[in-house]
Length: 185
Image (cartoon, rainbow, N blue to C red):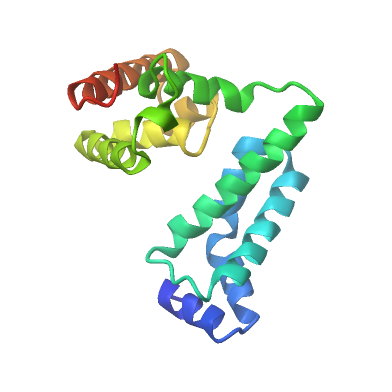
């Protein structure tokens, strides 16, 4: 079933929309949630919450790209759940990946106060579009899907050392790109 047909099912308030969404994007959403939460049950719960939120948001929203829309919801819900879990016990998996990226996009001041969010998003999209497909995939696997270095090396058939080196170089390239654009001090 096409994304447009699935979206139309939501607009028509047909429960089949959730079934078709799960059939087409269930594994995708579960992978995103699991990479953040590292727990199958919590990931499944997050995916169910994704469907619930999608059901409540469509209509009135009409996403352009359903896969991205679902991925963003699943990711945000998983991060929120991770934060609640982290408050109970310290777990640094997510923080390590985000801290690596933070070195590239923030200065001594608060990023949110200094930069217009849309400018940063636009700059990141341009930066990513200039990367080779392999480098872009590795970057997104680490900083969007939050895969571990081990998983990235396995998926891309490279050594963990090579994956770390590629990511370090990409972060440095991003930092320089943002400096040149005046988005980083």
